Length: 449
Picture 1: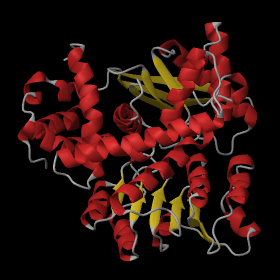
Picture 2 (picture 1 turned 30 degrees about the horizontal axis):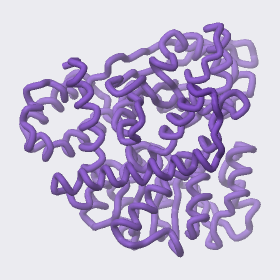
Picture 3 (picture 1 turned 90 degrees about the vertical axis):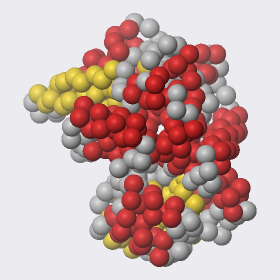
Picture 4 (picture 1 turned 180 degrees about the horizontal axis):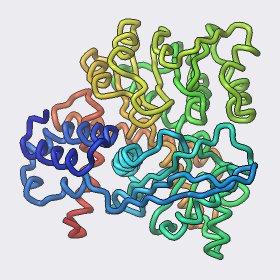
């Protein structure tokens, strides 16, 4: 229950209009709860209607995606795109292919993306898309046909100045390539800025693959430095997931002097007391696309446990959840706290549920919220858009330096907002207020409410 009656009324309307959408409800509640001190100090927002508009998507697209499997049988999946807010720039957000994708998940991701993109300081609105298609177990030809069918519907709704998709869970450089190729055929135009995460040979940015994982560590390093006078050096780290974000977070954490001892996939987790060998993990997960059990088979010091949620029982100084939403509940949070965790920084979107987040904050654990900590990916997507507009390609070092600067700026902005509204070390409140301020100012200036 929200303390502010006006915000509670806004939330009640969200529940009525979006029945059964638990992930979306959760994301909205967390933001509205964080905005309470801001609204109490700025009561004019109760009369201008901006918050009612802020929690309502500008547009939601749902479409069928028919495709032919290798046996010649017609298959049908459902596709989605939410164009949530364009006040500060074209809609920007990834495409996710996973069986869990539904309206609630897409709306929660799009809503979070609005604030995340605002925090990057780049001119990008928020959107998200995807399908309940599962790429696992599909052949290359099946994935290509699916991506082409998906883009055959989506292409009419996107554009470099309208809506710019990218990758997400289940959508990497391969899938982006297939979708961009289909867009190019349909539009009869090479518009590099229409999608990001492209291959380097056709307009992609160096550093984009590493961006979310590296950015997560840059943000966490800044949080440690400014709030504790500390660093990654000598710390033990646990990272959930083993996809693109997790692997590159592992790589950067090691470069910063930490030892990553555990990683996971949906089947279970591996523990290696000598530290995860990131080169082997990259080969297994990003090249061979094999299960994480392969790591334990090939690295004799590693052991495999067939329950991915038990990864949070591994003792660590820093936890980086990089798998999926709500992977850490209160019980897992309390186990981490009991084992002495000092920092939790979110690499996935909303990987900690509300009870877990509050448990960390109440215990004095440094907590980096996803919309700030994992903004590195979309930040470099914005830099890819800039390079496409300029018809230039920057060096990896230039992109990485820009990413590092953006992540430091994000920390400073949300830390400042937290202090201004008496939240002190509560970066969740700081991130939500800082992100909302920029978007709401643009919405009011444009007369959209």
